[in-house]
Length: 224
Picture 1: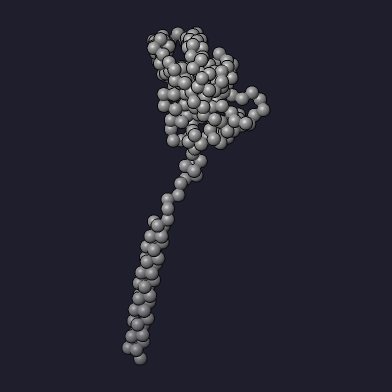
Picture 2 (picture 1 turned 120 degrees about the vertical axis):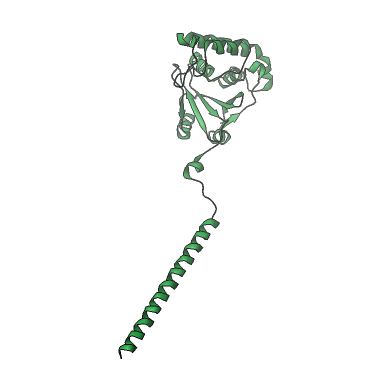
């Protein structure tokens, strides 16, 4: 009797172990299948990546038209400002006829910037956190005399000369960068797309909109 009981016990134990092994094998198979399934799914973009826009997408969403801007004497920033303030028309002919005026705008802005530079700019380059970042008196003078590409310091100059807010959409990077320059030579600050839409939809005076691409400035004119 005892022998039969022990045999039954051993059989139950074997069955139990076998079930456990089978269950473990099934669990392992299920995990492997789930893992394979996950690998088959396409990678999902993060919420941040989905929110990224290019400069061109931003101009479209803000209903801004990127117009052809003359590069005569590297005065594209001056031409952009002249069109944005409606001093001249947006046609090629209008820009060709006002080349001398673009040179004058460059000169006036250069002089305005030099008057605002602190004494240390004579010897030291502007650090991050100042409006003349990366510039010195000598560098700015070279840009003027050699008709070089006008920098962000010049955007400050135009903003203060005209007493107008200027918003720049930077198309040089994949991720969207929008920068706001206000009168007063305060450090320019990056703004969000939401803030840019608020500026665009405001019933008050529109800021001047510019597009910055590699070695070129373009006017962004509001569409109806």
